[in-house]
Image 1 (spheres, rainbow, N blue to C red):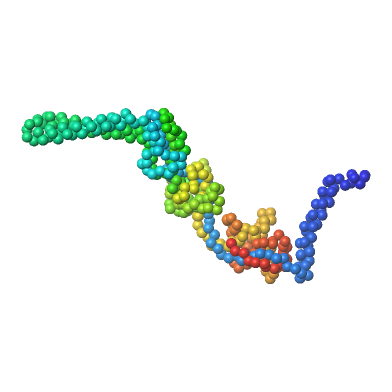
Image 2: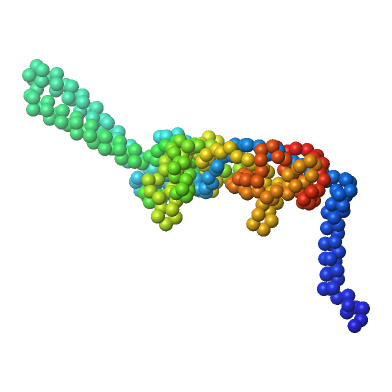
Length: 354
Protein backbone atom coordinates (compact mmCIF):
# COMPACT_ATOMS: atom_id res chain seq x y z
CA UNK A 1 0.00 0.00 0.00
CA UNK A 2 1.51 3.37 -0.99
CA UNK A 3 1.67 6.43 1.25
CA UNK A 4 -0.81 8.20 -1.08
CA UNK A 5 -3.41 5.48 -0.56
CA UNK A 6 -2.85 5.53 3.21
CA UNK A 7 -3.52 9.28 3.32
CA UNK A 8 -7.05 8.96 1.99
CA UNK A 9 -9.57 11.81 2.65
CA UNK A 10 -11.46 9.58 5.11
CA UNK A 11 -8.35 8.88 7.15
CA UNK A 12 -7.38 12.56 7.17
CA UNK A 13 -10.86 13.54 8.38
CA UNK A 14 -10.75 10.92 11.14
CA UNK A 15 -7.38 12.14 12.41
CA UNK A 16 -8.58 15.74 12.35
CA UNK A 17 -11.74 14.86 14.32
CA UNK A 18 -9.73 13.03 16.98
CA UNK A 19 -7.43 16.01 17.30
CA UNK A 20 -10.38 18.39 17.67
CA UNK A 21 -11.94 16.29 20.43
CA UNK A 22 -8.64 16.18 22.30
CA UNK A 23 -8.31 19.96 21.96
CA UNK A 24 -11.86 20.61 23.20
CA UNK A 25 -11.52 18.35 26.22
CA UNK A 26 -8.05 19.49 27.17
CA UNK A 27 -9.07 22.82 28.82
CA UNK A 28 -11.68 21.11 31.00
CA UNK A 29 -9.19 18.44 32.11
CA UNK A 30 -6.57 21.06 32.81
CA UNK A 31 -9.15 23.13 34.69
CA UNK A 32 -10.07 20.17 36.89
CA UNK A 33 -6.39 19.55 37.61
CA UNK A 34 -5.89 23.20 38.44
CA UNK A 35 -9.00 23.08 40.64
CA UNK A 36 -7.55 20.12 42.54
CA UNK A 37 -4.23 21.94 42.83
CA UNK A 38 -6.01 25.19 43.91
CA UNK A 39 -5.19 26.93 40.64
CA UNK A 40 -7.17 29.53 38.64
CA UNK A 41 -10.95 29.55 39.13
CA UNK A 42 -13.47 29.67 36.29
CA UNK A 43 -15.21 33.08 36.05
CA UNK A 44 -19.02 32.88 36.04
CA UNK A 45 -22.12 35.08 36.17
CA UNK A 46 -24.72 34.00 38.73
CA UNK A 47 -28.36 34.61 39.64
CA UNK A 48 -29.75 34.43 43.19
CA UNK A 49 -32.91 32.33 43.32
CA UNK A 50 -35.91 34.07 44.93
CA UNK A 51 -39.69 33.94 45.02
CA UNK A 52 -40.94 35.99 42.07
CA UNK A 53 -44.31 36.84 40.60
CA UNK A 54 -44.79 34.49 37.67
CA UNK A 55 -47.80 35.38 35.48
CA UNK A 56 -49.47 32.43 33.78
CA UNK A 57 -50.24 33.65 30.26
CA UNK A 58 -52.48 31.98 27.69
CA UNK A 59 -51.36 32.65 24.12
CA UNK A 60 -53.61 32.54 21.07
CA UNK A 61 -53.68 33.77 17.49
CA UNK A 62 -56.44 35.84 15.94
CA UNK A 63 -57.17 37.95 12.88
CA UNK A 64 -57.95 41.63 13.27
CA UNK A 65 -61.28 42.93 12.01
CA UNK A 66 -62.58 46.49 11.92
CA UNK A 67 -64.96 47.45 14.68
CA UNK A 68 -67.41 48.40 11.92
CA UNK A 69 -66.87 47.62 8.23
CA UNK A 70 -68.95 48.08 5.09
CA UNK A 71 -68.60 47.99 1.31
CA UNK A 72 -70.21 51.14 -0.05
CA UNK A 73 -72.67 50.85 -2.96
CA UNK A 74 -75.41 53.04 -4.45
CA UNK A 75 -79.13 52.52 -4.03
CA UNK A 76 -79.93 53.52 -7.61
CA UNK A 77 -78.43 52.85 -11.05
CA UNK A 78 -77.16 56.02 -12.67
CA UNK A 79 -74.12 58.00 -13.83
CA UNK A 80 -71.69 59.39 -11.23
CA UNK A 81 -71.91 63.17 -11.25
CA UNK A 82 -69.42 64.18 -8.52
CA UNK A 83 -67.00 62.45 -6.13
CA UNK A 84 -66.25 64.17 -2.83
CA UNK A 85 -63.46 62.00 -1.36
CA UNK A 86 -59.96 60.70 -2.03
CA UNK A 87 -58.44 57.29 -1.36
CA UNK A 88 -57.82 56.69 2.33
CA UNK A 89 -59.70 59.73 3.63
CA UNK A 90 -60.88 59.74 7.23
CA UNK A 91 -64.53 60.81 7.17
CA UNK A 92 -67.27 61.58 9.68
CA UNK A 93 -70.70 59.96 9.92
CA UNK A 94 -73.11 61.45 7.37
CA UNK A 95 -70.39 63.05 5.26
CA UNK A 96 -71.28 63.29 1.54
CA UNK A 97 -69.04 61.00 -0.52
CA UNK A 98 -70.61 60.76 -3.99
CA UNK A 99 -73.52 62.17 -6.02
CA UNK A 100 -75.23 60.52 -8.99
CA UNK A 101 -76.97 62.39 -11.79
CA UNK A 102 -79.81 64.12 -9.92
CA UNK A 103 -81.01 66.87 -12.31
CA UNK A 104 -84.41 65.26 -12.89
CA UNK A 105 -85.04 64.62 -9.20
CA UNK A 106 -84.01 68.17 -8.25
CA UNK A 107 -86.38 69.57 -10.87
CA UNK A 108 -89.19 67.41 -9.49
CA UNK A 109 -88.48 68.64 -5.95
CA UNK A 110 -88.49 72.26 -7.14
CA UNK A 111 -91.78 71.72 -8.97
CA UNK A 112 -93.48 70.18 -5.96
CA UNK A 113 -92.08 72.86 -3.64
CA UNK A 114 -93.59 75.59 -5.81
CA UNK A 115 -96.93 73.75 -6.09
CA UNK A 116 -97.01 73.22 -2.32
CA UNK A 117 -96.33 76.88 -1.64
CA UNK A 118 -99.16 77.87 -4.00
CA UNK A 119 -101.52 75.31 -2.46
CA UNK A 120 -100.72 76.58 1.03
CA UNK A 121 -101.40 80.16 -0.11
CA UNK A 122 -104.73 79.07 -1.54
CA UNK A 123 -105.56 77.18 1.66
CA UNK A 124 -104.91 80.29 3.71
CA UNK A 125 -107.17 82.37 1.46
CA UNK A 126 -109.98 79.79 1.51
CA UNK A 127 -109.69 79.45 5.28
CA UNK A 128 -110.22 83.20 5.66
CA UNK A 129 -113.25 83.07 3.33
CA UNK A 130 -114.69 80.08 5.18
CA UNK A 131 -114.68 82.02 8.45
CA UNK A 132 -116.99 84.61 6.81
CA UNK A 133 -119.07 81.87 5.12
CA UNK A 134 -118.00 83.07 1.69
CA UNK A 135 -116.29 79.72 0.90
CA UNK A 136 -117.88 76.35 1.59
CA UNK A 137 -116.51 73.76 4.02
CA UNK A 138 -116.20 71.31 1.13
CA UNK A 139 -113.86 73.63 -0.76
CA UNK A 140 -111.79 74.07 2.39
CA UNK A 141 -111.54 70.29 2.90
CA UNK A 142 -110.52 69.77 -0.74
CA UNK A 143 -107.75 72.34 -0.47
CA UNK A 144 -106.45 70.83 2.81
CA UNK A 145 -106.33 67.40 1.13
CA UNK A 146 -104.43 68.89 -1.82
CA UNK A 147 -101.84 70.42 0.53
CA UNK A 148 -101.37 67.07 2.32
CA UNK A 149 -100.99 65.23 -0.99
CA UNK A 150 -98.35 67.69 -2.20
CA UNK A 151 -96.43 67.33 1.08
CA UNK A 152 -96.42 63.56 0.67
CA UNK A 153 -95.28 63.82 -2.94
CA UNK A 154 -92.49 66.21 -1.87
CA UNK A 155 -91.30 63.73 0.78
CA UNK A 156 -91.15 60.97 -1.84
CA UNK A 157 -89.22 63.22 -4.22
CA UNK A 158 -86.75 64.21 -1.50
CA UNK A 159 -86.26 60.52 -0.61
CA UNK A 160 -85.50 59.68 -4.23
CA UNK A 161 -83.10 62.61 -4.40
CA UNK A 162 -81.33 61.37 -1.23
CA UNK A 163 -80.94 57.91 -2.81
CA UNK A 164 -78.73 59.52 -5.45
CA UNK A 165 -76.30 60.66 -2.73
CA UNK A 166 -73.80 58.36 -1.05
CA UNK A 167 -73.02 59.33 2.57
CA UNK A 168 -70.78 57.72 5.18
CA UNK A 169 -72.94 55.58 7.50
CA UNK A 170 -70.37 55.98 10.31
CA UNK A 171 -67.02 57.64 10.98
CA UNK A 172 -64.01 55.76 9.69
CA UNK A 173 -61.28 55.38 7.09
CA UNK A 174 -62.10 54.94 3.41
CA UNK A 175 -60.40 52.40 1.18
CA UNK A 176 -59.33 52.75 -2.45
CA UNK A 177 -61.86 54.31 -4.84
CA UNK A 178 -62.97 51.85 -7.52
CA UNK A 179 -64.89 54.22 -9.87
CA UNK A 180 -64.54 57.58 -11.60
CA UNK A 181 -66.79 60.50 -12.49
CA UNK A 182 -69.01 59.65 -15.48
CA UNK A 183 -69.12 55.91 -14.77
CA UNK A 184 -72.50 54.20 -14.83
CA UNK A 185 -72.94 52.28 -11.58
CA UNK A 186 -75.52 49.87 -10.22
CA UNK A 187 -76.32 48.75 -6.65
CA UNK A 188 -74.13 45.68 -7.19
CA UNK A 189 -70.97 47.75 -7.82
CA UNK A 190 -68.64 48.30 -4.84
CA UNK A 191 -67.48 51.91 -4.95
CA UNK A 192 -65.10 51.80 -1.96
CA UNK A 193 -64.86 50.44 1.56
CA UNK A 194 -65.28 52.12 4.95
CA UNK A 195 -63.73 50.79 8.19
CA UNK A 196 -63.96 52.10 11.71
CA UNK A 197 -60.40 51.47 12.93
CA UNK A 198 -60.40 53.36 16.21
CA UNK A 199 -60.90 49.91 17.72
CA UNK A 200 -60.39 46.49 16.16
CA UNK A 201 -62.07 43.21 16.99
CA UNK A 202 -60.03 40.03 17.35
CA UNK A 203 -61.70 36.60 17.54
CA UNK A 204 -59.52 33.78 18.86
CA UNK A 205 -59.96 30.28 20.28
CA UNK A 206 -58.55 28.90 23.52
CA UNK A 207 -58.81 25.49 25.13
CA UNK A 208 -61.89 24.71 27.21
CA UNK A 209 -59.78 24.14 30.34
CA UNK A 210 -59.14 27.92 30.46
CA UNK A 211 -62.88 28.72 30.49
CA UNK A 212 -63.14 29.31 34.28
CA UNK A 213 -60.50 32.04 34.07
CA UNK A 214 -62.31 34.04 31.35
CA UNK A 215 -64.42 37.10 32.09
CA UNK A 216 -65.68 40.19 30.31
CA UNK A 217 -63.47 43.29 30.67
CA UNK A 218 -60.46 41.02 31.27
CA UNK A 219 -57.32 42.71 29.94
CA UNK A 220 -55.39 41.29 26.99
CA UNK A 221 -52.21 42.26 25.13
CA UNK A 222 -51.90 42.04 21.35
CA UNK A 223 -48.64 41.75 19.41
CA UNK A 224 -48.06 42.15 15.66
CA UNK A 225 -45.02 41.30 13.55
CA UNK A 226 -45.55 44.64 11.79
CA UNK A 227 -44.65 46.52 15.01
CA UNK A 228 -41.94 44.53 16.85
CA UNK A 229 -41.73 45.31 20.55
CA UNK A 230 -45.01 47.25 20.61
CA UNK A 231 -47.96 46.04 22.67
CA UNK A 232 -51.57 46.97 21.97
CA UNK A 233 -53.93 46.96 24.94
CA UNK A 234 -57.49 45.69 24.91
CA UNK A 235 -60.10 43.73 26.83
CA UNK A 236 -62.42 40.79 26.34
CA UNK A 237 -65.83 41.94 25.11
CA UNK A 238 -67.60 38.58 24.90
CA UNK A 239 -67.14 34.83 25.32
CA UNK A 240 -69.06 32.41 23.11
CA UNK A 241 -71.89 30.46 24.72
CA UNK A 242 -70.75 27.14 23.22
CA UNK A 243 -67.59 25.02 23.19
CA UNK A 244 -66.65 23.56 19.80
CA UNK A 245 -67.26 19.82 20.05
CA UNK A 246 -64.54 19.04 17.48
CA UNK A 247 -61.67 21.14 18.82
CA UNK A 248 -62.78 21.41 22.47
CA UNK A 249 -62.07 25.12 22.32
CA UNK A 250 -64.18 28.21 22.88
CA UNK A 251 -64.25 31.41 20.86
CA UNK A 252 -63.41 34.67 22.57
CA UNK A 253 -63.73 38.20 21.17
CA UNK A 254 -61.48 41.02 22.31
CA UNK A 255 -61.64 44.73 21.53
CA UNK A 256 -58.19 46.28 20.96
CA UNK A 257 -57.70 50.03 21.20
CA UNK A 258 -56.19 51.43 18.00
CA UNK A 259 -56.05 55.24 18.40
CA UNK A 260 -53.23 55.71 15.86
CA UNK A 261 -54.92 53.41 13.29
CA UNK A 262 -51.81 51.19 13.12
CA UNK A 263 -53.72 47.92 13.13
CA UNK A 264 -55.57 47.04 9.95
CA UNK A 265 -58.24 44.42 9.20
CA UNK A 266 -56.72 41.10 8.20
CA UNK A 267 -53.55 41.42 10.29
CA UNK A 268 -52.47 38.37 12.32
CA UNK A 269 -52.25 39.19 16.03
CA UNK A 270 -50.80 37.22 18.92
CA UNK A 271 -53.09 37.56 21.92
CA UNK A 272 -51.61 37.20 25.42
CA UNK A 273 -54.25 36.62 28.08
CA UNK A 274 -53.06 36.70 31.70
CA UNK A 275 -54.74 33.79 33.44
CA UNK A 276 -53.33 34.22 36.96
CA UNK A 277 -50.18 35.30 38.82
CA UNK A 278 -48.23 32.79 40.94
CA UNK A 279 -45.37 33.32 43.37
CA UNK A 280 -42.73 30.81 42.27
CA UNK A 281 -39.01 30.20 42.14
CA UNK A 282 -37.74 31.16 38.72
CA UNK A 283 -34.31 31.14 37.08
CA UNK A 284 -32.97 32.48 33.79
CA UNK A 285 -33.50 30.04 30.95
CA UNK A 286 -29.76 30.12 30.15
CA UNK A 287 -28.94 28.46 33.48
CA UNK A 288 -30.79 25.24 32.58
CA UNK A 289 -28.59 22.42 31.22
CA UNK A 290 -30.66 19.66 29.59
CA UNK A 291 -29.35 16.10 29.65
CA UNK A 292 -31.60 13.55 27.96
CA UNK A 293 -34.97 13.89 29.74
CA UNK A 294 -33.54 15.63 32.82
CA UNK A 295 -32.69 19.26 33.63
CA UNK A 296 -29.66 20.42 35.65
CA UNK A 297 -28.17 23.65 37.00
CA UNK A 298 -24.86 24.51 38.61
CA UNK A 299 -25.17 25.89 42.15
CA UNK A 300 -22.34 27.76 43.88
CA UNK A 301 -21.35 26.24 47.22
CA UNK A 302 -18.16 27.52 48.91
CA UNK A 303 -16.66 28.70 45.61
CA UNK A 304 -17.38 25.31 44.04
CA UNK A 305 -19.80 24.47 41.23
CA UNK A 306 -22.20 21.74 42.33
CA UNK A 307 -24.48 20.20 39.72
CA UNK A 308 -28.10 19.77 40.83
CA UNK A 309 -31.07 18.18 39.11
CA UNK A 310 -34.19 20.36 38.99
CA UNK A 311 -37.78 19.91 37.91
CA UNK A 312 -38.96 22.73 35.68
CA UNK A 313 -42.51 23.97 35.19
CA UNK A 314 -43.93 26.71 33.01
CA UNK A 315 -41.76 28.79 30.76
CA UNK A 316 -41.84 32.37 29.62
CA UNK A 317 -39.42 34.15 27.27
CA UNK A 318 -36.06 34.08 29.06
CA UNK A 319 -37.21 32.54 32.37
CA UNK A 320 -38.21 29.11 33.70
CA UNK A 321 -40.30 28.14 36.72
CA UNK A 322 -38.57 25.75 39.15
CA UNK A 323 -40.93 23.24 40.72
CA UNK A 324 -38.32 21.44 42.86
CA UNK A 325 -34.58 21.07 43.27
CA UNK A 326 -33.67 24.60 44.38
CA UNK A 327 -34.25 26.79 47.41
CA UNK A 328 -34.62 30.53 47.74
CA UNK A 329 -31.24 32.25 48.19
CA UNK A 330 -29.13 29.73 46.24
CA UNK A 331 -26.91 31.05 43.48
CA UNK A 332 -27.12 29.37 40.09
CA UNK A 333 -24.63 29.83 37.25
CA UNK A 334 -26.09 31.73 34.29
CA UNK A 335 -23.00 32.26 32.16
CA UNK A 336 -19.91 30.05 32.06
CA UNK A 337 -21.70 26.77 32.86
CA UNK A 338 -20.40 25.04 29.73
CA UNK A 339 -16.83 25.25 31.06
CA UNK A 340 -17.70 23.75 34.44
CA UNK A 341 -17.58 20.24 35.84
CA UNK A 342 -19.04 19.09 39.12
CA UNK A 343 -16.69 20.44 41.81
CA UNK A 344 -14.97 23.06 39.64
CA UNK A 345 -13.61 26.11 41.44
CA UNK A 346 -15.35 29.32 40.33
CA UNK A 347 -15.03 33.04 40.77
CA UNK A 348 -18.14 35.22 40.54
CA UNK A 349 -17.72 38.03 38.08
CA UNK A 350 -21.17 39.58 38.53
CA UNK A 351 -24.74 38.84 39.53
CA UNK A 352 -27.56 39.20 37.02
CA UNK A 353 -31.26 39.95 37.50
CA UNK A 354 -34.37 38.98 35.53
